[in-house]
Image 1 (cartoon, rainbow, N blue to C red):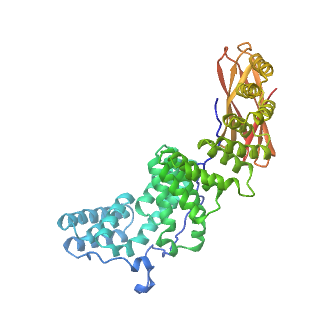
Image 2 (cartoon, rainbow, N blue to C red):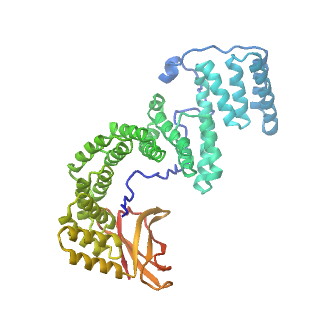
Length: 479
């Protein structure tokens, strides 16, 4: 027997950050603090920066300063040549005095002028490590370079060339970590490439940025968009941690979501699943008990609760949850199948007969549905009727099984298998699949035909529905 979970957890949401980014901290056109200002004019986090080891002038820094000035006054290849000279002298300065922050800062400026954002980021990092107050200067230089790299990546991303966009997002992240947008896009791309550890780390880092001390100095309109990004990032991070089997870490992320949104049902339900997976079944049961008593739940809520209760082996309670989902959307085949199986596993045989009868009407080519019915009848000492159902099962030309609702580009699909039992090889099975939303409204249908194989051979099929609506459940008919 196969239990069908369906789509329960938070999905990896596609995060296409549209449009070009603009400066979020009010930087001037040249990307630096301009005009007269006092210490009090700086953001609080800048005022709180420690002194560190102040930079010092020497023959190398003086020469590098001259080359940098000449580079900024030149164009094209001439500018690049001066930046290369400045970088070479700055590196000599580092070799001469590896504790002088100014040489690292000048090397960062030269690399930035040459378009090497990753190298510039590394040099600025070292300069700031030695002399933290360099961040007063590098903050705006970094963000200006970030804007250019991110916007170029966003343009390519929107054109559909994700691989071409990737290095620009990586450059943006390397030079500046004061904004989350590049991190979020990188995290999404990495997750699609299977680089899950890196993706989870970036989603987490993006949340730290959106909730950190620098955020309060950002433009209010930008901060409003970050509020939406933050929830997506947290759910995505938790889901990836779950895939990595880091269940306790995933639970901590869901707990963080609930600390701000105590009534977020998806986070509550997913937290319970994470508790189950991390061996904290009792904590999960407490959550499900609370959820089942909440008013206003929809069919998806009940379905998710039922899955969680099933995973904790609370089959009687799971049956109750699936029953509620089935009552709200009777056409949802998976909810009814799961309800019937939970009744069987909790020895509720009297109720099992009614559920199995309903399941056979909705899923008449399912071998397991007949076995549920026969088992329920046997438990009621109705052996002859049980034999009759098994004979009906044996007479079916084929079985339909392993059904699953799956997302696809531009809609959803139902995939499954048709297993030949008594039909001629090469004959066809013609199916119509109907799709429903969480309120039980039919959203559309799709026809599919399967050419049967040899006896007991399984052939996969897929029925697609193009829709932008939220599909919750499905059923099928054999034409």
